[in-house]
Amino acid sequence: MSARAAARLRTLGFERVFRYTPGKMDWFASGLPREGTMAGHPRAGDAARRDVPTCQWRERLGDVARRVRAAGWDLCVVVDEEAVVLGLLEAAALDGDPTTVAEDAMRPGPTTFRPHLALEEVTEPLKRKEHVLITTSNGRLVGMLLRADAERHIGEIGKGAHTASR
Image (cartoon, rainbow, N blue to C red; front, top):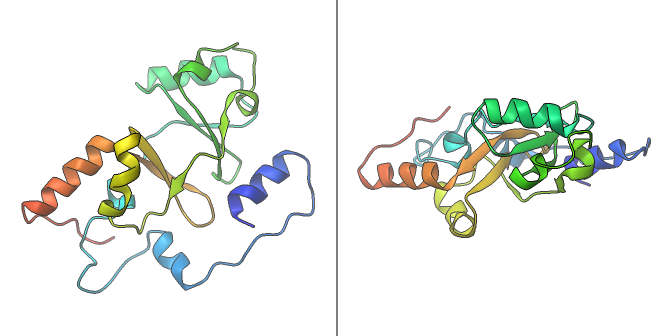
């Protein structure tokens, strides 16, 4: 079971939840340093915005909406205590009843991508969406990749500029 699914089950009151143990690919999926000829090639995690607002699943929409809008955003990623992504609050949800908790208003289980993926691998979903979430294989939020940021980074590849590996 994925970390995201395990985290969600814990929020629903399940106490005995088991999840997988990371392996070799987890190193890359966690955005850790890379080597080799493609190490400097931009990855989804390199272009992801780390300043995307987050909230806890039990926070009230009124408090979340004020904080999110003050930061200049119109959405918020709902996470648990370990920053594992549980859902997404988009603009319409933030306009809801301010006493509602995030868990009840969020879109659960948004699609996520790993930080080690080449930007080109994420371009197809970004043709249909303005943004995608980037998470580690443990489901922890890395950031949000915006279509405009991905296009800019891909454009830099064409001009010969490469992002250094982390």
